[in-house]
Image 1 (tube, rainbow, N blue to C red):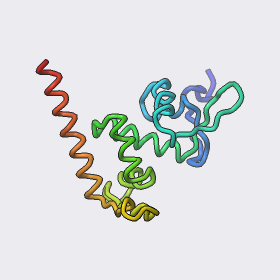
Image 2: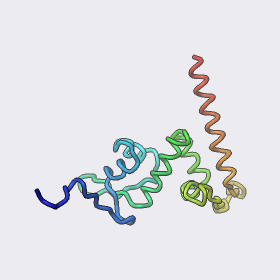
Image 3: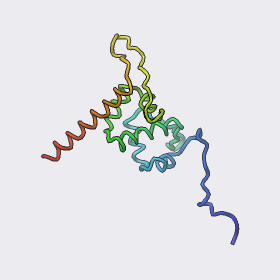
Image 4: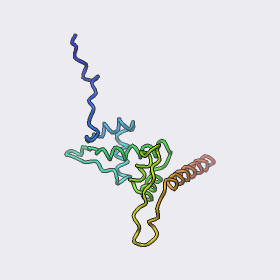
Length: 149
């Protein structure tokens, strides 16, 4: 018997700035790899680096975005279209910062003013929260309507 630890018992910790493979990200998020590939098709903001043979390498900012998408879908119960709407209305950066800010609530920055004069209204944290609440209520109404069929 040797004093060397079993290679499986050693967990090598990557730097926070290191790229992650699809299997590492899937394990970290506790979702199957095919779900990550599907999300790539639905969220253009998720753009892993693809190397020879189609291998995917996720940047740290991709992992943060995927964690937020997972939270919105699984924890908050939003649909993919609901998350896409949040990204469109508030911007990806603001939605990601919403969760990662102090106490889970960050002030949302206003999008840049629109050239057409009015569509670039400032969005606040309460606007985002009310939109999430409205989307959840709509989802519940849809479930009730489908159950009544």
